[in-house]
Image (cartoon, rainbow, N blue to C red; front, side, top):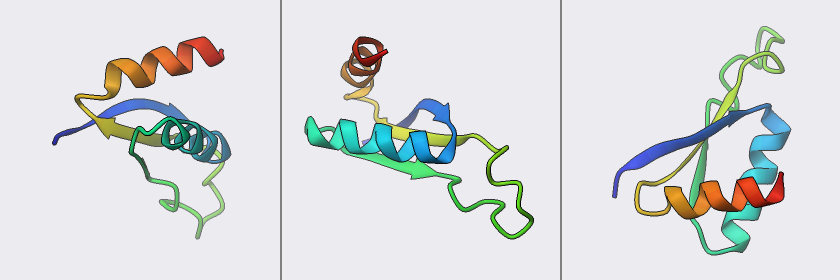
Length: 67
């Protein structure tokens, strides 16, 4: 298992994407969500959604269909 970046999103959107993926059986991870909460810039820093390299094509297809 190797994690790859699916995309970068604002914090709230990243968790929505994660929920959508996991509802379809694709395990995902949100990285950097708490990186800069202390200084108040967390809304400006993109959050990465990571998936297994074997799931990335299906995950991208799901995101494209949702858009």
